[in-house]
Length: 207
Ligand SMILES: [Fe+2]
Ligand SMILES: [Fe+2]
Image: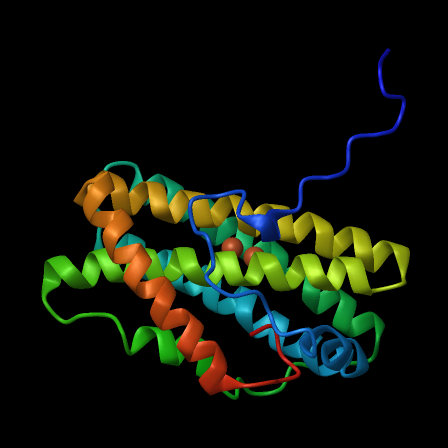
C-alpha cells in the first residue's frame, strides 16, 4: 500500500551534493542568528553580493574551462537576484546596507588557496564549492528555525539554490583538473574548513 504521507523535503545539509562538510554547524549558531536576525540579514546581503562578484571574477580569470563562462554568467545573475531579494526584505524591515565589514570565514578559506596558476584555479573553484555548501547548510537551518512562513520559504528556496551551486563548482573543478585530483584536494580543503570554522567562532552572520 502506498504511504500517504508526503515525502520529506530533501535536506541539503546532509550532503546532497559532492561537498560533504566534515563538521556540522555548532548548535549555538541558530539561536544566536535568530536573536540577531537583522544583523544576519545585512551580512547575507553582502554574501550574495560577493557570490555574484566572484562568479564574474572566475569568468574573467578562467574562460578556458569548458562551460565556465556561460555557467558563471548565469550564476552572477542568480546571485544578483538573491541579493535583490535580500535587499527587499531589509527595506521592508527598515534596514539599510552598511559597509561590508569583511567575512573572516571566507578570508580564512582563501588563505588556503595555493599560489601556482594551476593550483590556484583548482583551489578557487573548490573554495567556492565549500562556501556554497556551508551557506546551504546555514540557510537550511534558518529555514527550519524561522517562524515567519514567507521567510521560511525564502530561506528554503535559497538553500536549494546554493546546494545546486556547490555541485556546479565541483563539476567545474573536476572538468578542469580531473575528478580524482579535484576530490583529493576537496578532502584537504574540507579539513581546513573545519578548523577555519572553529577559528571564526560564533557570529551573527551567515558564516
Ligand atoms: Fe545566493
Ligand atoms: Fe550560491
